Length: 214
Image: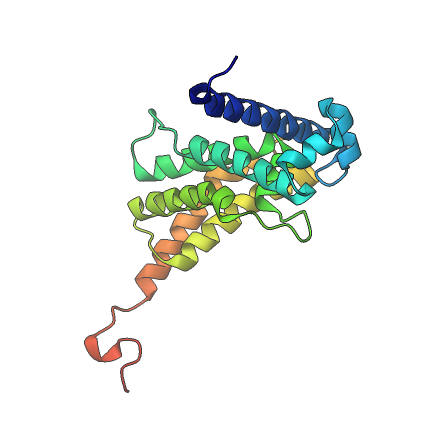
């Protein structure tokens, strides 16, 4: 008999186990049938559980997607935060990070689509599930700052650039390297552009500050 002091941890462990089984089955279906190509009926059959069991843990298909997003975003943030022992120069770190990003994305199309392509109309991740993605973006901003790049628009440009490389690879040369082999050149182009942009912008004087009268 389970006493009251043990029942809460036991039930929580059982709950986590059931949720993990459901989410794992959803990922398997997404990779086989496409991110939106599976139904709850398919999920029930794959997971070997009943429909009421699914609804005991998730109130909708989007809730399952949210759990999938949180899991994928955590994997992404952790991967991008890994140390790069063979790269110490800020530029080399940026190149290594871009390569790591490409490898992470290209190993799992369904995960890439969920994280980076808004492939599910009407789905928005919850703040809790989105938090690791915010952490990863902050890490990218810090890495750019090491390279002397601090403008918000350049962070946007960076994410567009590396995501675009991966998107082109998936769309036009799946399994190949036609676009990913351009990562190093893309980083050099990005750094050159940002530095030239900084050189062209004159330092503002106090009477040229935003909002100051002319």
